[in-house]
Image (tube, rainbow, N blue to C red; front, side, top):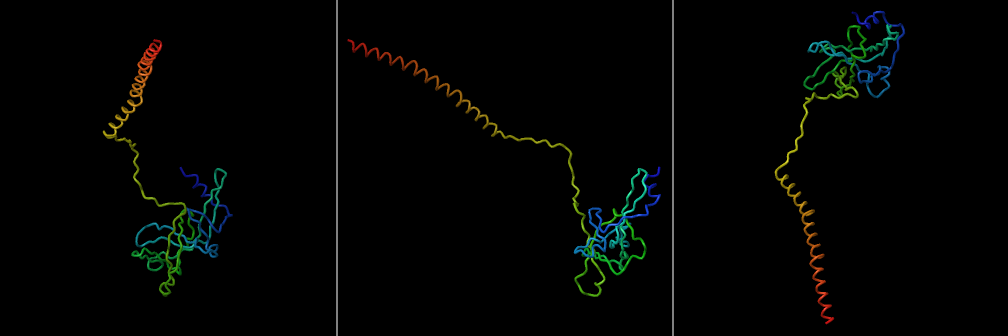
Length: 230
């Protein structure tokens, strides 16, 4: 089975294309070289990863010249859109168009030399953004060389890999014997104070006041009355 999108691309694009002076892709805001010439910042630097990562082949660096959108026929009556970057590539040959200073982590390109093949177009999804800066030195051997500075995409963070544990963790509360004993003593004290002691004092007080004291007072009153009458 052939992918439907491959069939759509096989019919070829429309003759009309759209272009923009700037384009947002992969978290970067790209500007064309002409549009960026009036800006104080550089957003026209483009980097494409090389196919092999070894000492004999470097990444490809260049300047963005045009942002082109192609439209293709679609079997669902909608147009398939493909965005291309047309770039002016620098020479990727080591010791001729680029140098790597591994000791200082510096990568530099010769902005006077260009790629000797005509392959200006890349997909927008392949592009990463870089900017180029000149050397502060005024030496002649550094006049034609720019230092490449790679930038980070917006709204992205290079987070380290973390080990996650899915096991449930049971939380256990450790209680010492001293805490248990103190809690029991506190309960006993509360029971004594609130119930037993109050009831005991209340009963004794009622008995003394209601029975003994009243009887004694009545007997004395009777005796006094009898003596006075006599």
